[in-house]
Image (cartoon, rainbow, N blue to C red; front, side):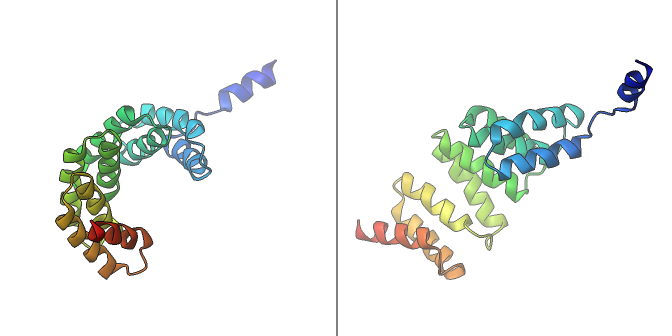
Length: 164
């Protein structure tokens, strides 16, 4: 009995960073439902963790819980308005919620901040095409293909838009 009590006393709670590391393994294994509880616990320990909020948002997004994911990405973007990871995930979540105008705003900001970031022009083009702004979408796709000529999705969308 005394040994068990000593073990319990020595047993320490995991730190937020450890919880995030474990959660990331689950996210990499496409198990967001296993990752999210760990991320919640990590955020209880470090409520202002940028990484914790982004990862929690990703887990929720993957579980199609977009409204909840949005809050985490908005929090992360508020912590650092120029964080590319927070912004790209925020835009994707807004898009998933059908809030295309807001997604466009975030994507335009991203293009201005990080014009050479992979996929940023493509993502903007997709949102523009959803709004029927095909000329702008074509221009963004051409920019994406200049930077990444082997981007098959960008090429396919460009071909579709030019045919219209």
